[in-house]
Amino acid sequence: MNEDLTALQSALGHQFSRPELLELALTHSSRAYEEAKATGQEEVETLDNEQFEFLGDAVLGLVASHLLFERFPNWHEGQLSKLKAHLVSARHLVGVGVRINLGQYLRLGRGEERSGGRARSALISDAMEAVIAALYLDAGLEKARAFIITEVLEPELKRIGAENDGDFTVPDYKSELQELLQSSGGAQPLYVTVKEEGPDHRKIFTVEVRVNPRGTNKSDYVARAEGDTKKKAEKLAAQQALEYLRAQPADLEPGNE
Image 1 (tube, one colour):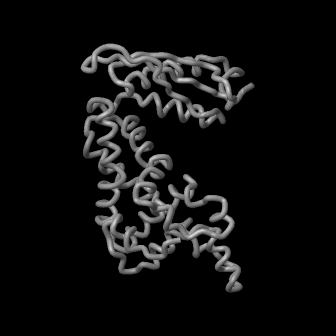
Image 2 (spheres, one colour):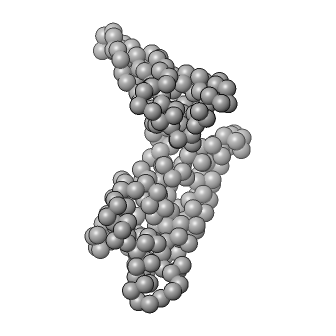
Image 3 (cartoon, one colour):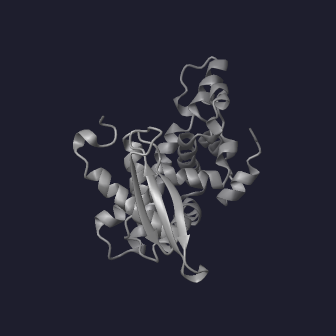
């Protein structure tokens, strides 16, 4: 592991006055256990980042809620909650963690290191929450808020707005399909562009989404849609797949064989 945290602190926009907070935020329970065992300690609860995860999750939730409350004053609670849930989700936090190379700074036990823990999504998302807590404890809410808005929230809001022509209320069918399949143990959907036709300035794309709800090697269902961009065609195909899966009898839904 790279013990020099200078680059990470630069990515966080803060030089820690108490660097031990950042080090603790990066310490996985496997490393804490090994260190405690080596020194003959029995209690290791305060030596890993799990409590920091709890605090960081709360700070992230507060900042996200406040930003959305101000940004979308006419939205009802359900709309705000749905967008917030995505912005603070583990899946989204993994992307942020990868962008700032968080995995290379994790303090892992030997077994976790050998098993590829630095690239493990759950460890990166948990550490991302813990690092937010460390930032909050060392520098206060405003510094943590600045990092969260700049690195976690605004880039994703910009991406969603661009994909949906500024309409944040458009359902994210691709994410919904992926979450439905994940929750039932199915394989990830596969999107394939099967046709492109028309001149460059007016192309029409035909995309298939191939769905394996039971995690098998064959596609149980294939949906096909057209759009003037690949993204639009993928979303329409995902919508068809979602409607199909949700219409299945309970004993035929993903995971119920």
